[in-house]
Amino acid sequence: MNRLANGVAMIAAGMVVLVSPVPQANAQSYTLDQVLAKMGEVGRTFRSLEASIERTKVDVIVKLEETELGKVFFKRTQTARPQIKFEFTKPAYTVVIIEGVARVYNPRTKQVQEYGLGKDHDPAEFLLIGFGQSDDQIRQTYNSALVGEESVNGQRTTVIELKPKSTQVGAIFNSIRLWIDHKNWIPLQTKATEPGAGNYQIAKFTNIKLNGDIKDSVFKLNQPKDVQIIK
Image (cartoon, rainbow, N blue to C red):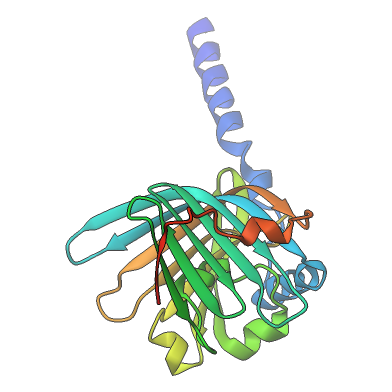
């Protein structure tokens, strides 16, 4: 009898363990319109972003992965284009994008590659989709779809997929996925996929600071005087 009672108790304990996560599953889910609306609300008050970034580039043909670690700074300006800086430490190089001009500094070669973007975008800019845009801007630029919900670093997110309406943008990335967290309604992760073979890059954001006071001097390249500038 004691053996039977112990067995029942063990089964009951197991049922408690199995059932306990259910309240999390019953947490509120969001529609695509709700997610875009909440992103738009955050976008209206967005001023700046500072975060750690881990970017992984994947070549699916040769099965090659390359991971870069560093920081990203993003600041809204009075003009249509923000100031952006990617400061990678592994490997060491810096990308600054200001007023439609991208500058890439490689300290190993002591070279700065500088090129005007015109009305185009640098591929790195697409990693920051979802920060500061209004829901109207997203709807005008992309066809969006709801993918589902996933956990990123223990935080619930809604995953949405954006497909560029512009063929010019679609030639760079034909789809961009955003993992939108349910607290701040910004991406904790983005995945941008290229057309053709489907090569892609994933950016993961941590240590996120929103709307801090980022000085304009942050977006200057710390380059030596003897650097070679290639235009």
